[in-house]
Image (cartoon, rainbow, N blue to C red; front, side, top):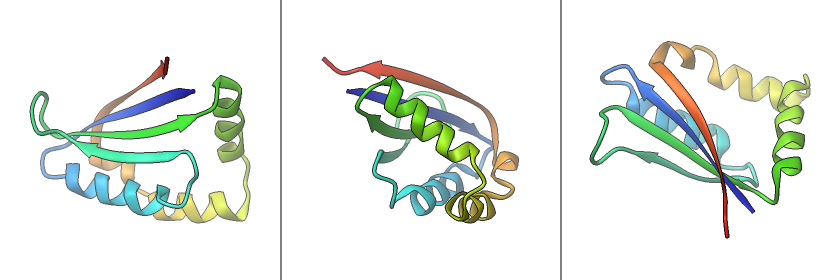
Length: 97
């Protein structure tokens, strides 16, 4: 199994908006696990945590989001403008032993 952390450093005052948006958009997705916000460390940090069986599973799911299905159109509509809420982001992929 692999765990993916997608980290967003938000503009001040926007971390809770980003967290709520991702929670709303991703809650029905089978790979979705958690939306986390900082209690210590770097301020305004939001981490989206998801899990996949393996890298192939991750890549297939990622490719699905690149297609123009009705589900993806709805998701993009809800997410419109979210790039304006954060400064930078990164992705980390971990293997679970």
